[in-house]
Each structure stands twice: as structure tokens, then as C-alpha cells.
Length: 371
Ligand code: NAD
Ligand code: GLY
Image (tube, rainbow, N blue to C red; front, top):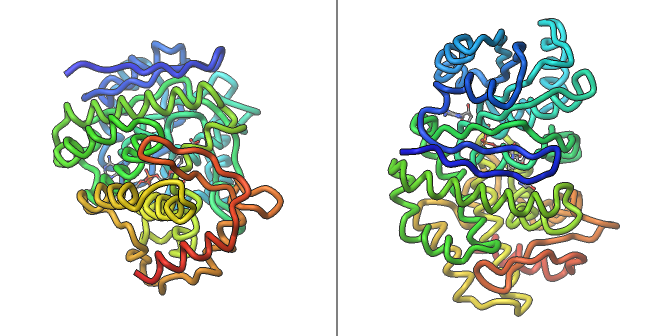
């Protein structure tokens, strides 16, 4: 199997995403090829470091890099001011200068945290993403959004900081827990639902096999997602409009995720699956699309085992509509207290809908929670 390259066209900030097997063992040569100098700080969570750091470290050494590893605790709770500040102190005490590159080895948590650190350390260092979850390979490692969470909500403190290179090693997915793989698949389906109806159909026919370990099919899926994201990011890097499409399902989903408490009871991708199903239900309520379309979306999610109703809320009770609405109003896309949603006229026909009526959203949420 060959390595596929997807280019993200952003002028001086352009970069390539390499997708293929065995890339962890060649990390050193690829990072060298984009001009990174000898000093690297690699950030990984404890689980990923245990499994994958030995191979990456070997490759970096053989390409002449001096790389130090900083381990952070596993899980969403690491996207905190506390872990962020500890990471900055540790990087500074290890010794860095303006030629140092920060490398994120892991899922979206590590990518968002290490990317934000790279954006502020010495006012901005080079950054490389080595995503090891499906979610990170198809979404979070591409496009330069970095962030940590605050008490007021998710991803509210961060920066746009594009990587120099993204290395998506498909073999890394082989050690990923099944539930995490599935959660990432919600973001894969998302691209079909936004503007790629043919891809949505392809996923309905091939998605389950890709999830079961067919690396060729997975390569096709990851590359298509990266092309879809690269296209949108190149058109609207700082989310003045079109990039918000990538948030399909996220305004509803983030509210469920926040109410579940970020403790692993409800994973980000699972929340996005629930959110996408509800976004289509809301589109039906507003007369934009049909029940048949919303059912097709729910069926695709359910077919692989993703949740479509808020059945996974960890140890917490199902959230109230009021609590969810409060969360939704705090979303980054909200303007003057009005909620912006990504809605759809059909599969592959998503659009940004600002100024959504709270009364209607309340009705959709009440219906979804009563299932
Ligand atoms: P994650 O980074 O927490 O990884 C999930 C779990 O999988 C972790 O426990 C990790 O230790 C483990 N893991 C990772 N790779 C592994 C591997 N190869 N083998 C075994 N275990 C492995 O979660 P995630 O789902 O990758 O990312 C979610 C985060 O991404 C959220 O914080 C979300 O806000 C963020 N996100 C950011 C963007 C963006 O554009 N920046 C986009 C989407 C999501
Ligand atoms: N995941 C949303 C974005 O990158 O814009």
C-alpha cells in the first residue's frame, strides 16, 4: 500500500498530510524533509507514549534529531489550564529555542494541547502532528485549530496555528480501542453529510469493513476526509463562514458532552453522532428536509454502533433541555446570545444557519430526550 498525500493549500502556511501504513517508523525522515531542525519536543499522553514512543523515538534518533518526550495524563481533562501551564514549564526547562519543533503524538487532546503550546512558546514554534486516533487523523490534526477548555466551556481558549506536516499512520489505528475508533467514525460520516453524498453512500457500503480492519478501505476513507477538510480550511482558514460547516452536530453534541462531564462517559465523537442525528431532526422540524433523510442518517450511525440518542451520559442523569440550551448559548458560534446551527436540506447539503429560534430548538431537544 502506498502513502497518499493530501495538500492543504494555505499560501505560506501550506502543508502536506501523509496517509499510509508504517509512517511512525519513518517519522524522522518525513519531519526532516519539511526542514525541521534538530531539536524536537514530543508531547504524548501516557497510553500512546507506552505503545508508540519507542518506534517514533528510534526513527527520530536515526534521522539525527534530539527529541525529548513530555507525557501528559490521558483524557479530555488534560485540555486544562493546569496541564497547559505544566507543559509550557516543562518544555522551557528542557531547553528550547526558536528552531525547536513541537510534535504532537496522539489523539485530538494531545494535538489541541501541544498545538496551543507551540503557538505561544517563544511566540510561536514549528509544529508537527502525528495523529494516532481516527478522529485526529480525519479532523483535529488538520486545519490548525488548537485549544484548551475553560470553566465556561470547551475549546474556548486557543489559537489558529497550522502544523508544518501531518503524519497519519494507519497502523496506529490497530492499537486504538474499538470505542475510540467508532467515535472517530462519527467525524468520518460528518464529511459525507456536509457536502459529499457519494462518500456517504460509499461509507454505508464500506464503512463497517474499514472499521473492522481493512486498511485499504480505511486509507480511502481517511484520505477523502482529509481532502474534504483541506478544501474547506483552504477556503476559510479562520472560520468566517464556510468552515463552520465542520461543526455539523457539534453545537448539540458539545452540550451533551459538557453535561456528561468529560469523564469518558460520553466521548467527543459519540456526542457528535448524537448531535448530527438531532441536527437532522431539527432540519425536519423546520421543513428543510424529510423524515426519510433524518432516518437515513440515524440508520447509518446505528449500523456501526454509534449512539443517536443521549443514551451514553456516563454516571450522570440525562441532562435537562434547559441545561443543554444554556450550554448551546455559550457555543463559540453564538452571536448576541443567538444560536448558530449547521442544518441540512438533505444528505450532503449542509448549511450554516445563524439566529436559530430557541423555541424550536427546545422542541427538538424535548422530542429527542423523550425517545
Ligand atoms: P483523545 O486524544 O483523548 O484520544 C482518545 C483515547 O485514545 C485516549 O485515551 C488515548 O490515550 C487513546 N489513544 C490514542 N491513540 C491511540 C492508539 N493509537 N492506540 C491506543 N490508544 C490510543 O481523543 P480524540 O478522540 O482523538 O480527540 C478528541 C479531542 O479532539 C477533543 O478534545 C476535541 O475537542 C478535539 N477536536 C479538535 C478538533 C480541531 O480541529 N482541533 C477537531 C475535532 C476534535
Ligand atoms: N473541527 C472543526 C474545525 O476544524 O473547524
